[in-house]
Image (tube, rainbow over all chains, first blue to last red; front, side, top):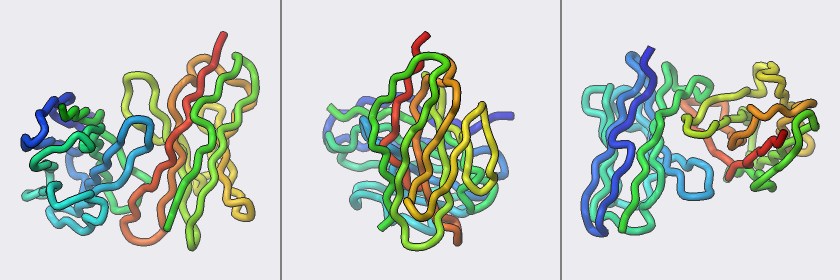
Amino acid sequence: GAGVSQSPRYKVAKRGQDVALRCDPISGHVSLFWYQQALGQGPEFLTYFQNEAQLDKSGLPSDRFFAERPEGSVSTLKIQRTQQEDSAVYLCASSSSGGPYEQYFGPGTRLTVT
Amino acid sequence: AQRVTQPEKLLSVFKGAPVELKCNYSYSGSPELFWYVQYSRQRLQLLLRHISRESIKGFTADLNKGETSFHLKKPFAQEEDSAMYYCALSGRSGYSTLTFGKGTMLLVSP
């Protein structure tokens, strides 16, 4: 079956621009996670959704970062007024339950801010 | 605070040699430990988790609570094992996000 998909796969933004990154989880998966992976680092947690409810946004680095999942399926991560330090790969993962055992990752969106 | 340390950025071995990728963690409580792998041009995927005590693709990992370690081992490396390996942990309760190490690149030469 189809796995987690993300779009766009690559995004180049000029500093100060707003960007929106999309995640399509596996159908029926309740839980959705966003991670940020900077060059040479492991993924770092950003935020977690259970259905449409954002239960944890403790990892969002600033108020320029905003995520939503209005209908409990597709999720969008929005970054306003992008900065160079936002350059990273943004990973989305979904799970049929809240536990980490079954997290399935998407291919990621590589964001480059120039 | 929970933390995962992978001391080696790169591990280079010859085919058939034993492999050990090191992972140490700090966590106040009983964590769940995992190894994730990312092959070239592929997405991150779960390799194994300590709770299931399984061997995947010849790899094993034992949780050592005394040393707070979860090293990944394989007795005879294969060229197809070349990949980026990430150690990760989560708590046992609730939804539990993953905390990753920085990763170790394993290169297996013929």
